[in-house]
Image 1: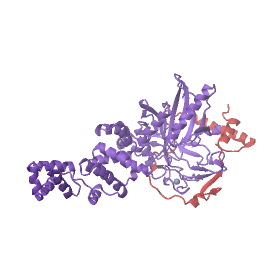
Image 2: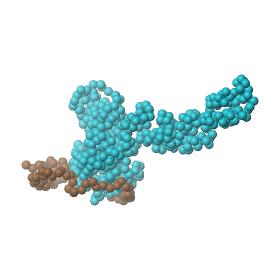
Image 3: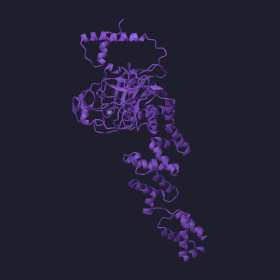
Length: 483
Length: 96
Ligand SMILES: [Zn+2]
Protein backbone atom coordinates (compact mmCIF):
# COMPACT_ATOMS: atom_id res chain seq x y z
CA UNK A 1 0.00 0.00 0.00
CA UNK A 2 1.36 3.45 -0.96
CA UNK A 3 2.57 5.12 2.26
CA UNK A 4 1.65 8.61 1.03
CA UNK A 5 -2.02 7.76 1.26
CA UNK A 6 -4.25 7.35 4.28
CA UNK A 7 -7.26 5.03 4.30
CA UNK A 8 -10.46 6.24 5.97
CA UNK A 9 -13.10 3.69 6.88
CA UNK A 10 -16.49 3.89 8.54
CA UNK A 11 -18.55 0.77 9.17
CA UNK A 12 -22.28 0.17 9.29
CA UNK A 13 -22.88 -3.07 11.13
CA UNK A 14 -26.24 -4.84 11.12
CA UNK A 15 -26.78 -7.17 14.03
CA UNK A 16 -29.65 -9.59 14.56
CA UNK A 17 -31.18 -9.27 18.03
CA UNK A 18 -31.61 -12.47 20.03
CA UNK A 19 -35.40 -12.50 20.27
CA UNK A 20 -37.70 -15.49 19.81
CA UNK A 21 -40.16 -13.66 17.59
CA UNK A 22 -39.86 -11.01 14.87
CA UNK A 23 -39.81 -7.29 15.58
CA UNK A 24 -43.37 -6.45 14.51
CA UNK A 25 -45.18 -9.82 14.46
CA UNK A 26 -45.28 -13.16 16.29
CA UNK A 27 -43.42 -15.21 13.67
CA UNK A 28 -40.35 -17.12 14.91
CA UNK A 29 -36.82 -16.02 14.00
CA UNK A 30 -35.29 -19.50 13.78
CA UNK A 31 -32.55 -19.95 11.22
CA UNK A 32 -32.75 -22.62 8.55
CA UNK A 33 -36.51 -23.26 8.47
CA UNK A 34 -37.95 -24.37 5.11
CA UNK A 35 -38.71 -21.35 2.88
CA UNK A 36 -41.79 -19.26 3.69
CA UNK A 37 -42.82 -21.25 6.77
CA UNK A 38 -42.18 -18.42 9.27
CA UNK A 39 -44.44 -15.78 7.77
CA UNK A 40 -47.74 -14.05 8.54
CA UNK A 41 -49.80 -11.21 7.07
CA UNK A 42 -47.69 -8.59 8.90
CA UNK A 43 -44.25 -9.66 7.67
CA UNK A 44 -45.62 -10.47 4.21
CA UNK A 45 -46.96 -6.93 4.06
CA UNK A 46 -50.51 -8.06 3.30
CA UNK A 47 -53.08 -5.24 3.16
CA UNK A 48 -54.81 -4.47 6.45
CA UNK A 49 -52.15 -5.96 8.69
CA UNK A 50 -50.61 -3.81 11.41
CA UNK A 51 -47.21 -4.03 13.10
CA UNK A 52 -46.81 -4.08 16.91
CA UNK A 53 -43.36 -3.61 18.43
CA UNK A 54 -41.73 -6.56 20.20
CA UNK A 55 -40.75 -5.22 23.63
CA UNK A 56 -37.77 -7.55 23.96
CA UNK A 57 -36.32 -6.22 20.68
CA UNK A 58 -36.48 -2.71 22.13
CA UNK A 59 -34.91 -3.88 25.41
CA UNK A 60 -32.03 -5.61 23.60
CA UNK A 61 -31.50 -2.59 21.35
CA UNK A 62 -31.40 -0.27 24.38
CA UNK A 63 -28.96 -2.63 26.07
CA UNK A 64 -26.72 -2.55 22.99
CA UNK A 65 -26.80 1.24 22.91
CA UNK A 66 -25.78 1.50 26.55
CA UNK A 67 -23.07 -1.15 26.20
CA UNK A 68 -21.63 1.01 23.40
CA UNK A 69 -21.80 4.07 25.66
CA UNK A 70 -24.33 5.59 23.32
CA UNK A 71 -26.89 8.12 24.62
CA UNK A 72 -30.46 6.83 24.51
CA UNK A 73 -33.02 9.20 23.03
CA UNK A 74 -35.86 10.36 25.28
CA UNK A 75 -38.20 10.05 22.33
CA UNK A 76 -37.61 7.76 19.40
CA UNK A 77 -39.77 6.71 16.47
CA UNK A 78 -39.88 4.49 13.43
CA UNK A 79 -39.84 5.65 9.82
CA UNK A 80 -40.56 4.10 6.48
CA UNK A 81 -37.63 3.76 4.11
CA UNK A 82 -39.18 3.42 0.68
CA UNK A 83 -37.70 1.41 -2.16
CA UNK A 84 -38.76 -1.34 -4.52
CA UNK A 85 -37.00 -4.63 -4.19
CA UNK A 86 -38.58 -8.09 -4.11
CA UNK A 87 -37.02 -8.98 -0.74
CA UNK A 88 -39.12 -6.19 0.77
CA UNK A 89 -42.79 -7.17 0.45
CA UNK A 90 -44.24 -3.85 1.69
CA UNK A 91 -41.99 -1.83 -0.68
CA UNK A 92 -40.68 -0.08 2.41
CA UNK A 93 -38.51 -1.10 5.30
CA UNK A 94 -39.48 0.00 8.80
CA UNK A 95 -36.33 1.67 10.07
CA UNK A 96 -35.38 4.80 11.98
CA UNK A 97 -34.33 8.05 10.37
CA UNK A 98 -34.15 11.38 12.21
CA UNK A 99 -34.91 10.22 15.75
CA UNK A 100 -32.82 7.08 16.15
CA UNK A 101 -32.75 5.07 19.36
CA UNK A 102 -29.34 6.37 20.43
CA UNK A 103 -26.59 8.80 19.40
CA UNK A 104 -22.86 8.85 20.09
CA UNK A 105 -20.80 6.31 21.96
CA UNK A 106 -17.53 4.54 21.36
CA UNK A 107 -15.78 1.19 21.28
CA UNK A 108 -12.21 0.57 22.38
CA UNK A 109 -10.34 -1.62 19.93
CA UNK A 110 -7.05 -3.46 20.09
CA UNK A 111 -5.48 -1.70 17.11
CA UNK A 112 -2.12 -2.95 15.83
CA UNK A 113 -0.47 0.15 17.36
CA UNK A 114 -2.25 -0.19 20.72
CA UNK A 115 -5.70 0.55 22.17
CA UNK A 116 -7.77 3.09 20.23
CA UNK A 117 -11.28 4.50 20.70
CA UNK A 118 -13.61 4.40 17.70
CA UNK A 119 -16.54 6.79 17.89
CA UNK A 120 -20.08 5.56 17.25
CA UNK A 121 -22.40 7.87 15.32
CA UNK A 122 -25.73 6.23 16.04
CA UNK A 123 -27.59 3.04 16.88
CA UNK A 124 -31.01 2.42 15.39
CA UNK A 125 -33.57 -0.38 15.08
CA UNK A 126 -34.96 -1.81 11.88
CA UNK A 127 -36.44 -4.93 10.34
CA UNK A 128 -34.50 -7.35 8.16
CA UNK A 129 -35.51 -8.09 4.57
CA UNK A 130 -36.19 -11.47 2.96
CA UNK A 131 -33.74 -13.73 1.21
CA UNK A 132 -33.37 -13.76 -2.56
CA UNK A 133 -32.18 -16.85 -4.34
CA UNK A 134 -31.02 -15.99 -7.82
CA UNK A 135 -31.50 -18.43 -10.60
CA UNK A 136 -29.79 -18.63 -13.95
CA UNK A 137 -26.18 -18.55 -15.05
CA UNK A 138 -23.80 -18.02 -12.18
CA UNK A 139 -26.59 -17.27 -9.71
CA UNK A 140 -25.33 -13.70 -9.65
CA UNK A 141 -27.59 -10.65 -9.76
CA UNK A 142 -28.01 -9.32 -13.26
CA UNK A 143 -27.27 -12.56 -15.01
CA UNK A 144 -30.07 -14.46 -13.29
CA UNK A 145 -33.17 -15.40 -15.26
CA UNK A 146 -35.49 -15.13 -12.30
CA UNK A 147 -35.29 -14.82 -8.55
CA UNK A 148 -36.93 -16.79 -5.78
CA UNK A 149 -37.91 -15.11 -2.54
CA UNK A 150 -38.04 -16.60 0.94
CA UNK A 151 -39.64 -14.22 3.45
CA UNK A 152 -38.65 -16.10 6.63
CA UNK A 153 -36.09 -13.44 7.49
CA UNK A 154 -38.38 -10.53 6.73
CA UNK A 155 -39.08 -8.70 9.98
CA UNK A 156 -36.26 -10.25 11.99
CA UNK A 157 -35.16 -7.52 14.43
CA UNK A 158 -31.88 -5.77 13.69
CA UNK A 159 -29.89 -2.93 15.06
CA UNK A 160 -27.63 -0.92 12.84
CA UNK A 161 -24.49 0.43 14.48
CA UNK A 162 -22.88 3.23 12.50
CA UNK A 163 -19.29 4.20 13.28
CA UNK A 164 -17.58 7.50 12.58
CA UNK A 165 -14.90 7.34 9.85
CA UNK A 166 -12.28 6.72 12.53
CA UNK A 167 -10.77 3.50 11.20
CA UNK A 168 -7.48 3.82 9.34
CA UNK A 169 -6.72 0.32 8.07
CA UNK A 170 -8.30 -3.01 7.25
CA UNK A 171 -6.70 -4.37 10.44
CA UNK A 172 -8.35 -1.67 12.53
CA UNK A 173 -11.69 -2.42 10.91
CA UNK A 174 -11.17 -6.08 11.76
CA UNK A 175 -10.27 -5.24 15.38
CA UNK A 176 -13.38 -3.03 15.62
CA UNK A 177 -15.63 -5.86 14.43
CA UNK A 178 -14.04 -8.27 16.92
CA UNK A 179 -14.55 -5.78 19.78
CA UNK A 180 -18.15 -5.13 18.72
CA UNK A 181 -18.90 -8.83 18.46
CA UNK A 182 -17.46 -9.48 21.92
CA UNK A 183 -19.60 -6.74 23.46
CA UNK A 184 -22.80 -7.88 21.74
CA UNK A 185 -22.24 -11.52 22.64
CA UNK A 186 -21.28 -10.85 26.26
CA UNK A 187 -24.36 -8.73 26.82
CA UNK A 188 -26.68 -11.35 25.30
CA UNK A 189 -27.83 -8.92 22.60
CA UNK A 190 -26.98 -11.21 19.72
CA UNK A 191 -25.38 -14.59 19.13
CA UNK A 192 -23.40 -12.88 16.32
CA UNK A 193 -23.40 -16.13 14.38
CA UNK A 194 -21.67 -15.17 11.15
CA UNK A 195 -22.66 -18.33 9.26
CA UNK A 196 -26.31 -17.53 9.91
CA UNK A 197 -25.90 -13.90 8.86
CA UNK A 198 -26.52 -12.53 12.37
CA UNK A 199 -23.84 -9.89 11.81
CA UNK A 200 -23.41 -8.14 8.47
CA UNK A 201 -21.41 -5.13 7.51
CA UNK A 202 -21.27 -2.32 4.96
CA UNK A 203 -17.98 -0.44 4.72
CA UNK A 204 -17.53 3.15 3.55
CA UNK A 205 -14.01 3.52 2.25
CA UNK A 206 -12.09 6.48 0.94
CA UNK A 207 -8.45 7.39 0.62
CA UNK A 208 -6.62 10.73 0.82
CA UNK A 209 -3.06 12.02 0.84
CA UNK A 210 -1.60 12.00 4.33
CA UNK A 211 -2.13 15.35 6.06
CA UNK A 212 -5.16 16.16 3.90
CA UNK A 213 -8.15 17.28 6.01
CA UNK A 214 -10.95 16.81 3.49
CA UNK A 215 -12.29 13.28 3.05
CA UNK A 216 -11.87 11.65 -0.34
CA UNK A 217 -14.79 10.36 -2.39
CA UNK A 218 -16.02 7.15 -0.83
CA UNK A 219 -17.17 3.85 -2.21
CA UNK A 220 -19.50 1.63 -0.21
CA UNK A 221 -18.85 -2.10 0.02
CA UNK A 222 -22.19 -3.75 0.69
CA UNK A 223 -23.40 -6.68 2.70
CA UNK A 224 -20.35 -8.61 3.82
CA UNK A 225 -20.74 -11.30 6.44
CA UNK A 226 -17.29 -12.66 7.21
CA UNK A 227 -14.62 -10.72 9.11
CA UNK A 228 -11.92 -12.24 6.95
CA UNK A 229 -13.67 -11.18 3.73
CA UNK A 230 -14.30 -7.71 5.12
CA UNK A 231 -10.59 -7.32 5.77
CA UNK A 232 -9.64 -8.50 2.27
CA UNK A 233 -12.37 -6.38 0.67
CA UNK A 234 -11.25 -3.18 2.44
CA UNK A 235 -7.65 -3.92 1.58
CA UNK A 236 -8.54 -4.44 -2.08
CA UNK A 237 -10.78 -1.38 -2.27
CA UNK A 238 -8.20 0.97 -0.72
CA UNK A 239 -5.55 -0.30 -3.11
CA UNK A 240 -7.91 0.17 -6.05
CA UNK A 241 -8.73 3.77 -5.08
CA UNK A 242 -5.08 4.68 -4.52
CA UNK A 243 -4.25 3.29 -7.95
CA UNK A 244 -7.03 5.37 -9.52
CA UNK A 245 -5.69 8.53 -7.85
CA UNK A 246 -2.05 7.84 -8.70
CA UNK A 247 -3.04 7.34 -12.32
CA UNK A 248 -4.63 10.79 -12.22
CA UNK A 249 -8.21 9.54 -12.16
CA UNK A 250 -11.10 10.22 -9.80
CA UNK A 251 -12.82 7.82 -7.44
CA UNK A 252 -16.49 7.41 -8.32
CA UNK A 253 -19.01 7.40 -5.49
CA UNK A 254 -20.72 4.04 -5.84
CA UNK A 255 -21.83 0.86 -4.13
CA UNK A 256 -19.72 -2.20 -4.75
CA UNK A 257 -20.05 -5.88 -3.98
CA UNK A 258 -17.25 -8.16 -2.88
CA UNK A 259 -16.71 -11.35 -4.84
CA UNK A 260 -15.04 -13.66 -2.35
CA UNK A 261 -14.18 -16.26 -4.94
CA UNK A 262 -12.39 -13.89 -7.29
CA UNK A 263 -11.00 -11.79 -4.43
CA UNK A 264 -12.15 -8.54 -6.03
CA UNK A 265 -15.02 -6.06 -5.82
CA UNK A 266 -17.25 -4.87 -8.63
CA UNK A 267 -19.74 -2.00 -8.87
CA UNK A 268 -23.43 -2.66 -8.30
CA UNK A 269 -25.52 -1.45 -11.20
CA UNK A 270 -27.87 0.67 -9.11
CA UNK A 271 -30.24 3.19 -10.53
CA UNK A 272 -29.62 6.67 -9.20
CA UNK A 273 -33.08 7.19 -7.74
CA UNK A 274 -32.80 3.99 -5.73
CA UNK A 275 -31.11 6.17 -3.10
CA UNK A 276 -34.06 8.55 -2.75
CA UNK A 277 -35.72 6.71 0.11
CA UNK A 278 -38.36 9.38 0.93
CA UNK A 279 -38.34 8.58 4.64
CA UNK A 280 -41.44 9.53 6.53
CA UNK A 281 -42.76 8.66 10.03
CA UNK A 282 -44.34 5.19 10.27
CA UNK A 283 -47.99 5.99 11.01
CA UNK A 284 -48.73 2.46 12.30
CA UNK A 285 -46.25 2.62 15.19
CA UNK A 286 -46.65 5.18 17.97
CA UNK A 287 -43.57 6.96 19.33
CA UNK A 288 -41.47 5.47 22.13
CA UNK A 289 -40.58 7.42 25.23
CA UNK A 290 -37.63 6.19 27.26
CA UNK A 291 -37.76 7.45 30.82
CA UNK A 292 -34.71 7.91 33.05
CA UNK A 293 -35.94 5.01 35.21
CA UNK A 294 -36.11 2.63 32.25
CA UNK A 295 -32.71 3.79 31.08
CA UNK A 296 -31.13 3.19 34.47
CA UNK A 297 -32.82 -0.19 34.87
CA UNK A 298 -31.36 -1.30 31.54
CA UNK A 299 -27.96 0.03 32.53
CA UNK A 300 -28.14 -1.93 35.79
CA UNK A 301 -29.05 -5.09 33.90
CA UNK A 302 -25.88 -4.96 31.80
CA UNK A 303 -23.39 -7.66 32.71
CA UNK A 304 -19.68 -6.98 32.96
CA UNK A 305 -18.41 -5.85 29.55
CA UNK A 306 -15.64 -7.82 27.86
CA UNK A 307 -13.03 -5.07 28.20
CA UNK A 308 -13.53 -4.94 31.98
CA UNK A 309 -13.70 -8.71 32.19
CA UNK A 310 -10.43 -9.07 30.32
CA UNK A 311 -8.79 -6.68 32.80
CA UNK A 312 -10.22 -8.62 35.73
CA UNK A 313 -9.06 -11.96 34.30
CA UNK A 314 -5.55 -10.58 33.98
CA UNK A 315 -5.46 -9.17 37.49
CA UNK A 316 -7.50 -11.60 39.54
CA UNK A 317 -6.31 -14.78 37.84
CA UNK A 318 -2.85 -13.57 36.77
CA UNK A 319 -3.45 -14.66 33.17
CA UNK A 320 -1.39 -13.19 30.39
CA UNK A 321 -2.90 -10.95 27.70
CA UNK A 322 -3.07 -13.77 25.17
CA UNK A 323 -4.86 -16.24 27.45
CA UNK A 324 -7.28 -13.60 28.76
CA UNK A 325 -8.00 -12.67 25.14
CA UNK A 326 -8.74 -16.25 24.13
CA UNK A 327 -11.13 -16.73 27.06
CA UNK A 328 -12.92 -13.41 26.44
CA UNK A 329 -13.34 -14.17 22.74
CA UNK A 330 -16.69 -15.69 23.62
CA UNK A 331 -18.88 -15.22 26.64
CA UNK A 332 -19.60 -18.94 26.92
CA UNK A 333 -15.89 -19.67 27.01
CA UNK A 334 -15.26 -17.01 29.67
CA UNK A 335 -18.23 -18.34 31.68
CA UNK A 336 -16.93 -21.91 31.34
CA UNK A 337 -13.58 -20.78 32.68
CA UNK A 338 -15.09 -18.94 35.62
CA UNK A 339 -17.29 -21.92 36.48
CA UNK A 340 -14.12 -24.02 36.62
CA UNK A 341 -12.44 -21.51 38.92
CA UNK A 342 -15.59 -21.43 41.09
CA UNK A 343 -15.11 -25.20 41.48
CA UNK A 344 -11.66 -24.51 42.98
CA UNK A 345 -9.61 -25.30 39.88
CA UNK A 346 -6.39 -23.24 39.86
CA UNK A 347 -6.81 -20.52 37.21
CA UNK A 348 -3.75 -21.10 35.05
CA UNK A 349 -4.25 -24.87 34.91
CA UNK A 350 -7.98 -24.38 34.25
CA UNK A 351 -7.15 -22.03 31.37
CA UNK A 352 -4.65 -24.49 29.88
CA UNK A 353 -6.96 -27.49 30.06
CA UNK A 354 -9.86 -25.49 28.68
CA UNK A 355 -8.14 -23.67 25.83
CA UNK A 356 -5.64 -26.35 24.79
CA UNK A 357 -7.23 -29.73 25.51
CA UNK A 358 -10.98 -29.09 25.42
CA UNK A 359 -11.05 -26.41 22.71
CA UNK A 360 -8.56 -28.43 20.68
CA UNK A 361 -10.86 -31.44 20.71
CA UNK A 362 -14.01 -29.38 20.11
CA UNK A 363 -12.43 -27.50 17.20
CA UNK A 364 -11.27 -30.76 15.66
CA UNK A 365 -14.88 -31.92 15.64
CA UNK A 366 -16.29 -28.55 14.57
CA UNK A 367 -18.22 -28.14 17.82
CA UNK A 368 -18.73 -25.06 19.94
CA UNK A 369 -18.02 -24.71 23.65
CA UNK A 370 -21.78 -24.81 24.31
CA UNK A 371 -21.80 -28.32 22.80
CA UNK A 372 -19.01 -29.61 25.02
CA UNK A 373 -19.62 -33.12 26.38
CA UNK A 374 -17.38 -32.19 29.33
CA UNK A 375 -18.96 -29.87 31.91
CA UNK A 376 -16.97 -27.11 33.66
CA UNK A 377 -17.48 -28.95 36.97
CA UNK A 378 -15.97 -32.16 35.61
CA UNK A 379 -13.04 -30.43 33.93
CA UNK A 380 -12.37 -28.51 37.15
CA UNK A 381 -12.43 -31.78 39.07
CA UNK A 382 -9.90 -33.29 36.68
CA UNK A 383 -7.60 -30.28 37.03
CA UNK A 384 -7.87 -30.51 40.81
CA UNK A 385 -7.07 -34.24 40.81
CA UNK A 386 -3.88 -33.51 38.92
CA UNK A 387 -2.97 -30.53 41.08
CA UNK A 388 -3.49 -32.61 44.24
CA UNK A 389 -1.37 -35.40 42.82
CA UNK A 390 -4.23 -37.91 42.80
CA UNK A 391 -3.38 -38.69 39.20
CA UNK A 392 -0.43 -37.76 37.05
CA UNK A 393 -0.70 -35.32 34.17
CA UNK A 394 -0.18 -38.19 31.77
CA UNK A 395 -3.02 -40.22 33.25
CA UNK A 396 -5.01 -36.95 33.25
CA UNK A 397 -4.94 -36.83 29.45
CA UNK A 398 -6.14 -40.42 29.31
CA UNK A 399 -8.98 -39.64 31.72
CA UNK A 400 -9.84 -36.50 29.73
CA UNK A 401 -10.12 -38.47 26.50
CA UNK A 402 -12.55 -40.80 28.26
CA UNK A 403 -14.52 -37.85 29.69
CA UNK A 404 -14.85 -36.35 26.21
CA UNK A 405 -16.08 -39.69 24.89
CA UNK A 406 -18.54 -40.57 27.61
CA UNK A 407 -19.28 -37.32 29.43
CA UNK A 408 -18.62 -39.16 32.71
CA UNK A 409 -17.08 -37.63 35.84
CA UNK A 410 -13.29 -37.95 36.11
CA UNK A 411 -13.43 -39.45 39.63
CA UNK A 412 -15.74 -42.10 38.32
CA UNK A 413 -13.40 -42.94 35.43
CA UNK A 414 -10.32 -42.96 37.68
CA UNK A 415 -12.04 -45.21 40.25
CA UNK A 416 -13.48 -47.64 37.68
CA UNK A 417 -10.24 -47.94 35.78
CA UNK A 418 -8.11 -47.84 38.94
CA UNK A 419 -5.99 -45.00 37.63
CA UNK A 420 -5.52 -42.94 40.73
CA UNK A 421 -2.05 -42.35 42.04
CA UNK A 422 -1.81 -42.79 45.80
CA UNK A 423 -0.16 -39.66 47.12
CA UNK A 424 -1.88 -39.37 50.45
CA UNK A 425 0.93 -39.69 53.03
CA UNK A 426 -1.53 -41.03 55.62
CA UNK A 427 -2.73 -43.82 53.33
CA UNK A 428 0.85 -44.47 52.32
CA UNK A 429 2.17 -44.71 55.91
CA UNK A 430 -0.46 -47.29 56.70
CA UNK A 431 0.49 -49.27 53.64
CA UNK A 432 4.21 -49.02 54.44
CA UNK A 433 3.68 -50.10 58.04
CA UNK A 434 1.74 -53.14 56.88
CA UNK A 435 4.50 -54.13 54.46
CA UNK A 436 7.16 -53.66 57.17
CA UNK A 437 5.15 -55.79 59.61
CA UNK A 438 4.70 -58.51 56.99
CA UNK A 439 8.43 -58.60 56.21
CA UNK A 440 10.28 -58.42 59.56
CA UNK A 441 13.46 -60.01 58.07
CA UNK A 442 14.29 -57.41 55.41
CA UNK A 443 13.15 -54.68 57.80
CA UNK A 444 15.64 -55.74 60.43
CA UNK A 445 18.37 -56.17 57.79
CA UNK A 446 17.85 -52.59 56.59
CA UNK A 447 17.98 -51.25 60.12
CA UNK A 448 21.25 -53.16 60.59
CA UNK A 449 22.79 -51.26 57.69
CA UNK A 450 21.95 -53.50 54.75
CA UNK A 451 20.33 -50.64 52.81
CA UNK A 452 20.03 -52.66 49.58
CA UNK A 453 16.84 -54.24 51.01
CA UNK A 454 15.11 -50.89 50.48
CA UNK A 455 14.55 -51.79 46.81
CA UNK A 456 12.79 -54.99 47.86
CA UNK A 457 10.55 -53.10 50.30
CA UNK A 458 9.67 -50.41 47.71
CA UNK A 459 8.67 -53.22 45.35
CA UNK A 460 6.38 -54.74 47.98
CA UNK A 461 4.66 -51.40 48.71
CA UNK A 462 4.15 -50.75 45.01
CA UNK A 463 2.69 -54.20 44.64
CA UNK A 464 0.40 -53.69 47.62
CA UNK A 465 -0.87 -50.42 46.08
CA UNK A 466 -1.61 -52.09 42.76
CA UNK A 467 0.98 -49.86 41.07
CA UNK A 468 -0.79 -46.68 42.02
CA UNK A 469 1.49 -45.44 44.76
CA UNK A 470 3.57 -42.41 43.97
CA UNK A 471 7.08 -44.04 43.91
CA UNK A 472 8.86 -40.92 45.15
CA UNK A 473 6.57 -40.78 48.15
CA UNK A 474 7.01 -44.53 48.81
CA UNK A 475 10.77 -44.06 49.03
CA UNK A 476 10.45 -41.06 51.27
CA UNK A 477 8.00 -42.68 53.70
CA UNK A 478 9.86 -45.97 53.83
CA UNK A 479 13.03 -44.13 54.84
CA UNK A 480 11.06 -42.14 57.40
CA UNK A 481 9.53 -45.31 58.97
CA UNK A 482 12.82 -47.26 58.88
CA UNK A 483 14.94 -44.40 60.22
CA UNK B 1 -45.34 30.67 -7.75
CA UNK B 2 -46.26 26.97 -7.88
CA UNK B 3 -43.89 24.57 -6.13
CA UNK B 4 -45.04 21.47 -7.95
CA UNK B 5 -43.89 21.28 -11.55
CA UNK B 6 -44.41 18.53 -14.10
CA UNK B 7 -40.80 17.50 -13.42
CA UNK B 8 -41.61 16.93 -9.73
CA UNK B 9 -44.59 14.77 -10.64
CA UNK B 10 -42.57 12.75 -13.13
CA UNK B 11 -39.90 12.13 -10.51
CA UNK B 12 -42.41 11.05 -7.87
CA UNK B 13 -44.12 8.79 -10.39
CA UNK B 14 -40.80 7.19 -11.26
CA UNK B 15 -39.95 6.62 -7.58
CA UNK B 16 -43.38 5.10 -6.99
CA UNK B 17 -43.09 2.86 -10.06
CA UNK B 18 -46.10 4.54 -11.71
CA UNK B 19 -46.50 4.97 -15.42
CA UNK B 20 -48.19 8.27 -16.33
CA UNK B 21 -49.28 9.71 -19.64
CA UNK B 22 -48.88 13.47 -20.30
CA UNK B 23 -52.56 14.19 -19.47
CA UNK B 24 -52.22 12.55 -16.07
CA UNK B 25 -48.96 14.32 -15.40
CA UNK B 26 -50.62 17.66 -15.99
CA UNK B 27 -53.64 16.73 -13.87
CA UNK B 28 -51.56 15.52 -10.92
CA UNK B 29 -49.33 18.57 -11.08
CA UNK B 30 -52.43 20.67 -10.48
CA UNK B 31 -53.76 18.33 -7.74
CA UNK B 32 -50.52 18.20 -5.80
CA UNK B 33 -50.15 21.97 -6.00
CA UNK B 34 -53.63 22.29 -4.47
CA UNK B 35 -52.65 19.97 -1.63
CA UNK B 36 -49.61 22.13 -0.96
CA UNK B 37 -51.76 25.23 -1.07
CA UNK B 38 -53.85 23.80 1.75
CA UNK B 39 -50.70 23.02 3.70
CA UNK B 40 -49.58 26.62 3.29
CA UNK B 41 -52.83 27.62 4.93
CA UNK B 42 -52.03 25.32 7.88
CA UNK B 43 -48.59 26.91 8.05
CA UNK B 44 -50.23 30.21 8.94
CA UNK B 45 -51.37 28.79 12.29
CA UNK B 46 -49.41 29.93 15.30
CA UNK B 47 -47.82 26.76 16.70
CA UNK B 48 -45.53 28.40 19.23
CA UNK B 49 -45.41 26.27 22.37
CA UNK B 50 -46.90 23.21 20.70
CA UNK B 51 -44.46 20.31 20.84
CA UNK B 52 -43.48 18.66 17.60
CA UNK B 53 -45.01 15.25 17.03
CA UNK B 54 -44.48 12.45 14.58
CA UNK B 55 -47.81 10.85 15.29
CA UNK B 56 -51.38 12.10 15.30
CA UNK B 57 -52.61 9.77 18.06
CA UNK B 58 -51.86 10.54 21.72
CA UNK B 59 -50.29 7.12 22.16
CA UNK B 60 -46.82 6.02 23.17
CA UNK B 61 -44.99 2.87 24.20
CA UNK B 62 -47.32 0.38 22.59
CA UNK B 63 -45.75 -3.04 22.44
CA UNK B 64 -46.23 -6.77 22.90
CA UNK B 65 -44.25 -9.50 24.63
CA UNK B 66 -41.71 -11.60 22.72
CA UNK B 67 -43.93 -14.60 22.12
CA UNK B 68 -44.03 -16.92 19.11
CA UNK B 69 -47.45 -17.66 17.65
CA UNK B 70 -48.27 -19.61 14.49
CA UNK B 71 -48.49 -17.56 11.30
CA UNK B 72 -49.66 -18.68 7.89
CA UNK B 73 -49.26 -22.12 6.38
CA UNK B 74 -46.91 -22.03 3.45
CA UNK B 75 -49.71 -22.80 1.01
CA UNK B 76 -51.70 -19.87 2.39
CA UNK B 77 -48.66 -17.62 2.27
CA UNK B 78 -47.98 -18.51 -1.35
CA UNK B 79 -51.63 -18.42 -2.41
CA UNK B 80 -51.43 -14.82 -3.60
CA UNK B 81 -48.08 -15.17 -5.33
CA UNK B 82 -48.13 -14.50 -9.08
CA UNK B 83 -45.65 -17.33 -9.59
CA UNK B 84 -44.25 -20.03 -7.29
CA UNK B 85 -41.22 -22.25 -7.57
CA UNK B 86 -39.46 -24.42 -4.96
CA UNK B 87 -41.79 -23.14 -2.21
CA UNK B 88 -40.71 -19.58 -2.94
CA UNK B 89 -42.25 -16.50 -4.51
CA UNK B 90 -40.81 -16.29 -8.02
CA UNK B 91 -40.12 -12.85 -9.42
CA UNK B 92 -38.63 -11.57 -12.67
CA UNK B 93 -34.87 -11.17 -12.73
CA UNK B 94 -33.53 -8.20 -10.81
CA UNK B 95 -31.03 -5.81 -12.31
CA UNK B 96 -28.87 -4.27 -9.63
ZN1 LIG C 1 -44.86 -12.49 10.61
